[in-house]
Length: 101
Image (cartoon, rainbow, N blue to C red; front, side, top):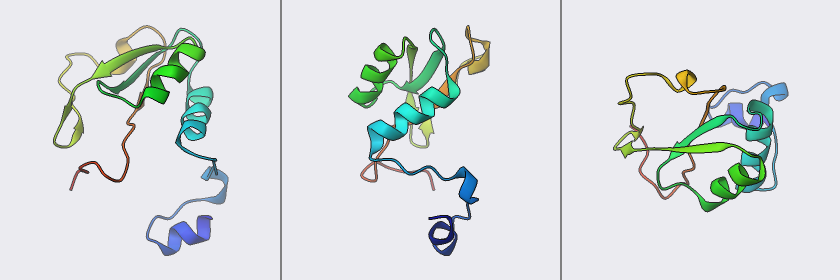
């Protein structure tokens, strides 16, 4: 997989590639690796419903962040790490949404 990604212009080390069975599985792995119960997770205000389900199941606090034309808006006066517990930022987009240039 790492070789294929490199051939497509996205170099990746094999030890940094994780294969999943879909988006929900990928989110579960990402959240399990980066959060603990009670942590705050930043996601798009209108996020994927599976993200909401996972945050409930994993006892995470989900905080919505507004979007602009380039993705998550960074208008807060303090960084996400200032929230209680380590924060994780997840963008739940698919190929049909607008992407930054």
